[in-house]
Length: 479
Ligand code: 2M8
Image: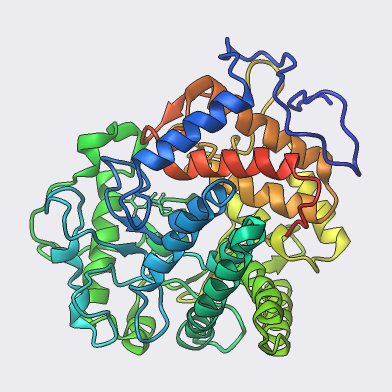
């Protein structure tokens, strides 16, 4: 166990109950909160961030609806309020574009105009005839976790809501299918079976070093952007957030896409950033498998979903698995290069239920290596989003090293799916310790456990809830 978080006795085959005790590993004083008290705090937080139709990621920093946040939140909330969980996803899909794209942000028209930047006046989604009328959104998407989330929400419905839940699933199914078929058709310029993203914001891991080599070379012509003021820095410290140079590039890409009226063919043909992300595609594959199950539940044909899932699986192995490096790599389609950075996106293909065992083993070796499993001397928390030994690792800056509970949750599911329960448990223990130490923060320093970014962050509360409740539930079918 050298170099590991001490989780107490664990078995390779049987998941442990969600650990609430904290055998020493050099943790600073951790609040002795019970899971029950933390579940109550998580619920209170999610209720405070509930708007009546959906849940804000946080009150100040993110005062609108975000796409994959709502998927994470719906899963966590569904353990105690299945109705709001269903509403959350349905509200998001009311803003689905005619192309099938689910936008990354749906703006709250009641929020003050300067509450978030870039807001609806910058995005101007109405420039696209495919955007929903009278409902301002962003013009890009985020990882398609929603079919998986919908299936989980349905599974958690109490028996007296099973009819309502199935009717909801029937309403959601065609919208979820449209979301997936959009990605298959509009985002696969090479016809490989893999969907490309056109903006780092589409990855959800916006500032990840996974695409530094491509992103950093984007030159913003002088005068290309009007003067603007970053609002994120009103609510979070600058050293936790993206640098001004990166923010400038984010906005520049946004304006190029906006100026193409978010026409997919034009955007994909010209986007300076065109990246195949293993995490985005692994989530897409995991959700396509969820569609197989949903189709069975609503009386539709699961066969087409099986065929798409097989195609994505083959393409991930054929195009993104680099045997020489024993790693999945992001693929920069513009320059036709595989990105060498060792980041958490490389582990996401664990979500593929058919991932070959030698590849599962290689991913676990890397997850257990000192790059992602910091030394046992002193406190340490899993899983850093970037190799802690890499140049440029930053324990506190947004997506460039900190631990996030959503990536922990995805890996936890992936590892359990492949019977790697000991490692999955270590991740659950670390997640629990971080919450006890620093609260439901947006992200955490993997070396000292301090909290960063936003406070009272919704998906941290929701996913903590899901990990606790899943481990308590003997009948949970698992992903
Ligand atoms: C972060 O992204 C937004 C832009 O979409 C931002 O920084 O303003 C990311 O962490 C993203 O994954 C997340 O969905 C969003 C809201 O929590 O914040």
